[in-house]
Image 1 (cartoon, rainbow, N blue to C red):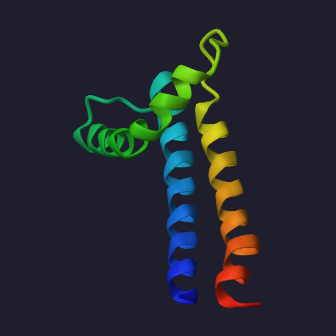
Image 2 (cartoon, rainbow, N blue to C red):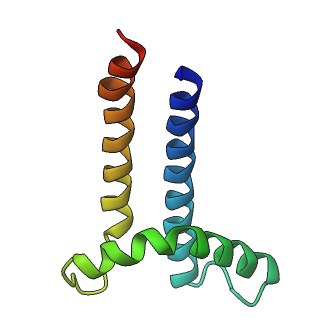
Image 3 (cartoon, helix red, strand yellow):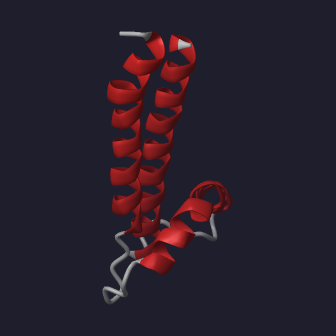
Length: 98
């Protein structure tokens, strides 16, 4: 059971890094540092978009419009960190009997 909890915690950590990478890549594309005409950049951006958009989409609909500033990745990262801490500090000791 402990191995499963560690795996879930690591998957959450990995997803946090994917969200951060998506946010940074979107900024680089928005400021024309990277060009989506490049096939590699387009492929990476597409993969990150497909992995993060199903979770970020509902958060974006819930948040108010802030004039072009998208804080949905910050909200998602805070939620994932809360979930990870809840899992490791509260749920794991109850399941492991400690």
